Amino acid sequence: MRKALAGGAMACAMVSLAACHQGHGSGDLPGDPDDHTPFARIAEGDTVRLTGTEPFWGGTVASGTFTYTTPEQPDGVAIPVERFAGRAGLSFTGELEGKTVALMITEGQCNDGMSSRRYPFTATLKLGDEQREGCAATDALPATETTN
Image (cartoon, rainbow, N blue to C red; front, side, top):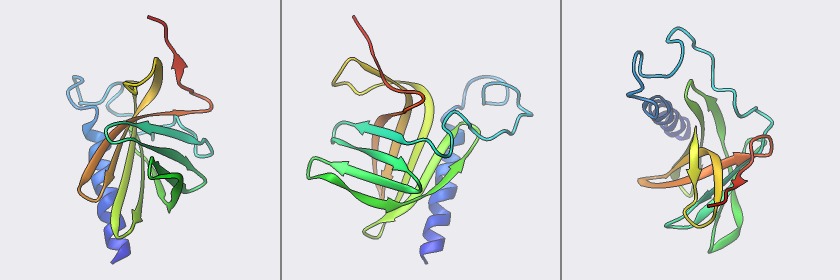
């Protein structure tokens, strides 16, 4: 059953990654419609840092583990995840307390709404039926401070 859940989450994540760039003109995805190269802006060995608000959440993805943090669990919960690189971004899928976890990372400027930092990626986290939005960065592509 666990493999069926992970497979369903993976299919959902893949559809979500493709849907994130719909409406950009010919072929729905930017660039060459014949290019089927997987998303490569975040290398397999990169650590992805995440932050989200309302409700507050965050964490990191590194070495096949999503460490999910909340104000109630500041040290985080380690969730083994599988990585999938689609055309428009990455997904990481796993399971937490019987709930499917699907984390989707797509390219696009993001602001956490609480600071002047700008992030190079957006993050969408599905925990079972609950969806959370946030921002993401890596060491190679970090968040930057902006001035108004």
